[in-house]
Length: 156
Image (cartoon, rainbow, N blue to C red; front, side, top):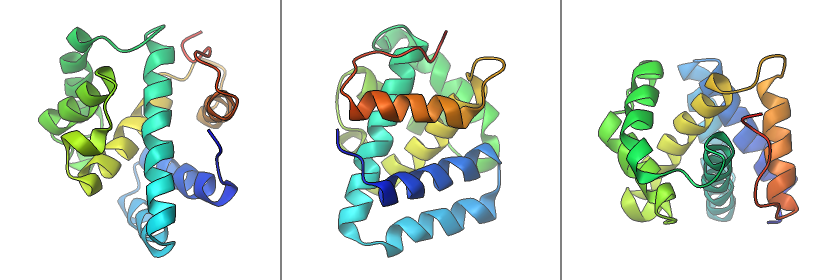
């Protein structure tokens, strides 16, 4: 996967806003993606969905199993309650990934992207190994996506 530096920066800032639990920063970051145009939004969505898929695969040592989705959806909705993410929306997003589908086929595209940001930020903040910073895990994940490596060491 080729990752444009500008798109990566926009996604990184959006994830940082979620991790910081900063609604104002999240709004500004989201608007920056929208202001960059439709192509950038499409690329950012693709990157975000790939990141979530990759992080989940690393966390579960392979593709996330459909029987794990309900517990993950409940956890992210509870832990990121400040975002207003509903567990049923998180479930639809996560189930799409578990089934190898594009989340924007399961949810309206804007809802899929906002859910992807919340889930991605949660995965990076809640499951980063001790002694590592979430950005180093993100960098590792991005490197794996760029180099088409099938599985990394997120959970190690």
